[in-house]
Amino acid sequence: MPIKTSAGLQDSGTADESDTENFEADRELSELIDQHENTDWTAVPGISAAEAGAWTARLIEARETMQEDL
Image (tube, rainbow, N blue to C red; front, side, top):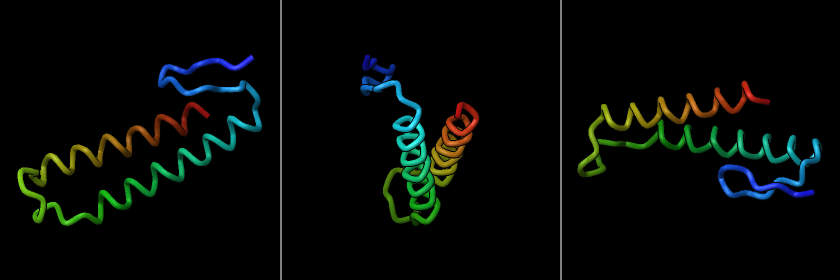
């Protein structure tokens, strides 16, 4: 029976689908982190290097937490 996760996504509850979804989410999060790290934040008005660094750190922490939960 499908269940809704806290993010509102539907989970069928099968391991194969969960593994595939987790792998895809990890890959997409890693791509986002790479793009975030490669952004020239000095060219973005109103965003300090400290803010950008904090955001990157949060993304990395989210990826690590997700990987620990697998």
